Image (cartoon, rainbow, N blue to C red; front, side):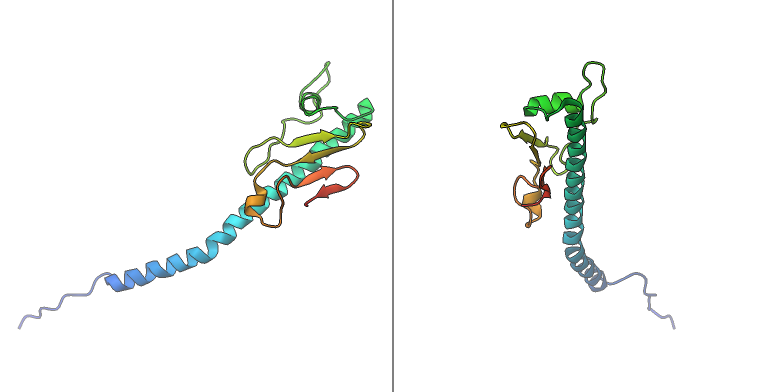
Length: 145
């Protein structure tokens, strides 16, 4: 007598669906943490950029006796070579969250105090960060709110 039994090869549809559901559940658990980690790294990079620009501004202040008087002067004197002198910092850093330029304001009463601020989108992703932050000022250091 011949047997009509086939050897079982492969997986059933139910088994495949269960595996796909398990992979989906694991993805929904892990993915938000990975995305938040990416934005946290960008925020940390932004803080480092502001510290580096502040260091370049301090060197400029030592050389010139004051800080640049406007945002345009800041960009021209810190990131571009002038009068045969190399730039204080190159290239000009940009916010890693949206590739925007950093803001620069100076105290116009004596030009001996400045504030750098981030125009990025960190505040949209990291809820503990307010718009326009982080900021750096020589008298207060790095500020988050």
